Every structure is written in structure tokens, then in C-alpha cells.
Image (cartoon, rainbow, N blue to C red; front, side, top):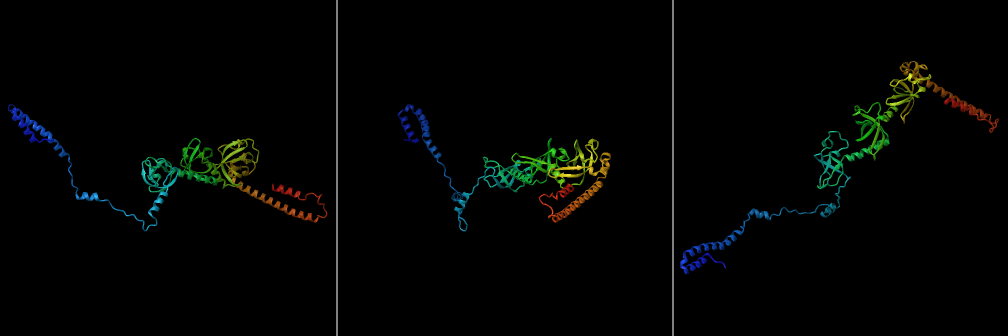
Length: 420
């Protein structure tokens, strides 16, 4: 039961009247206690009053805002060729999976640090590193030099999704496979092609063939050495070895040069050459990048005991082509057919080379006359053979067929001797 301050004061005053001697003390004490007790009793009332929250009235705008539910979209499939259920089934049936090594179409949308961003229709954009942006990259090329912005290309996925759902893609690997397909096709056709030299080493040179690095051995380099001067030159080449599995590509400049020049050469042509080496059986002469053999028996009509007394390495000579093998690139040469007189190669080689064209023309005229003479002789033999057959028919009654000798044997031998 709670006591008010007034009731407590009355109670204390009655106690003081009963004890007059303590009036002043009790009265003073009573006032203090009354004040303290009153404070103690009334304090909870003030605390309870402060604890009640003040209710703030909502404004008209707040009430409208709280009641607003947003725009209402009324979905309808009236007038459409399909329903929303059909659309949902189509979405569920569509496969959005992107797997490693898949080739997808994409659009370059933005250059980024060390590559570019590509939109391939995935939940996150793919990234094309600069190292995977092109098969052929020159030193100093940036991503802007290799890939055009907003261009649509085929990309190969080369990674799984990272924690952000991003994929890595490549253009270089697609171009790499296409380059090998072209190389294999060119090898099957065995055609001559051109390629640029991009580097040299001790063994030869490196050429770019359809973007692939091909090795050109120094032994298959015609008329040049594999030095730095070769870098940047474009050479005619043919394939020596194509091994896609082993990533090995070997080419030859000599084969290409030989094939091109052999197509323009024929027997009887006069060519200029350079003596490269001497052997006991003859001299090797370089003819436009090809190596021809000048056999010792074809140097002069006179006998040669010491070939070094007639020819020297590095000497310029003129020769006539007397035979060639276009498949293997071999040429047989002769200087004795250019001698105005037999033995001139031993006595005066300069005279032989100076008069080479004139002597060759006379040689061709002589060979043509001999050919016609052989044809006439063969013709006479055939006509004579006809007469012999007539005589054989007329005398058939007088000759025993079983014991007679072959009447054509002598004619056949004569024909063989003329045609040989």
C-alpha cells in the first residue's frame, strides 16, 4: 500500500506531539524523512511516465506511399502464336551449357587489361587473353592490333567457369587447326608456295607457312647462307615433311627452285654455270640453284688425264644440257658438244665458251640432219620389207615353209642398227 506525502507528514506530526521534548529534532527529522520517502515513492511514477513512447502521426504522403503497391502488369497471351506455358517449356528445353573445347560465336564488346571481353551468350562475359587472340603475332602487337572491336568471330572455350562464372576463350587455337588443314591439303597437291623468313639459326632458317613455323634446313637453301640478311625475304618453297601429330613442318627452297627452273629447261639448251666441286669422275656445276654433273667423258672429245688442268672450282662455264631428270632435279651437262674443233676445251676453253651459241647451232643442225637420215634409212628398210614380202608370196610354191630360214631376220637386224 502506497502512502502519500501528506499522510506521512500527519503521522509524524502526531508522534511529535506525544513527545514534546523531542519536538524540534523530530520535526526536523520528520521533514527530511518525509522528503526522502516522498521522493522514493513518487520516483517510479516519473519513470513510468518517461517510458511511454510518443506516437507520431503519419502525414498524408506517408499514408499514400504505404498504400502504393506499384504498377500492375496484366499478362495475356491473346494474339500470340504461343502461350506462356509453351515459352516456359522452350526455355527449359534450351541447353545453355558451355563446355571446354566447344566452338561458339561471340562478339568483342570491350578491350580489357591484357585482352578483351567477349559476349558469347553465357551468364557472364568471356575473356580473350592477348596470347590467344591470333595465331600470327608480331613483337609489339597489342590486343587492338589483333582483334577489332564489335567484330563477330568464332571462339573456342579453353577453361571451365571461374567463381564469377567467366570463361576463357581462344581464337588462336581455331586458326592453328585451320592452318594445319591448309598445309596438309597443299602437301597432297605438292605445289610450290611462298613464305617469309622470320628467323635464322645455325641449322637453317624459320619460315611462316600459313602462320605455322616451318624449318628450312641450310642444305635446302639455294644460292644463300642462313644469315641475318635472309630475314624478311620471301622464298619459293616445297614441303619435305608434314607431321601434324608431332608438330613438325620441314620445307625446301632447293626443290621449289629446281622444279620451277626444270620446267623451263630442255635438252640442247645452253646454260651458264659455276663449277662448285671436282671429283675423279667429273665436275659439279651449279645452274640457277641446281647442281648439274659435267661428266669427265663430256668435257672434251680428247682424252683428259687431269681434270684440274681444265676446270677449277669457282670457274664460270657454259654447258649444253644433254639430259635431265625433272622428278629428281638432276641435269647432265656437256662442253664437248660446244667445241668448234675436238680438243678445244684442253687448248682454249675461253674460245669454246665464246663461240658456244654458234657451235651449238651447228650441233643442232648436224643432229637434225642425222635424225632425218635415220628416218629415211628406216623408211627405205620398211619399203624394202614390203618388196621382200611380195617376193616371198610369189615364191611360196617353190619354198618349203618348214625348212625355210626367217626372211625378215636380216631386215630386222639392219633396222635395229639404224635406230640404235
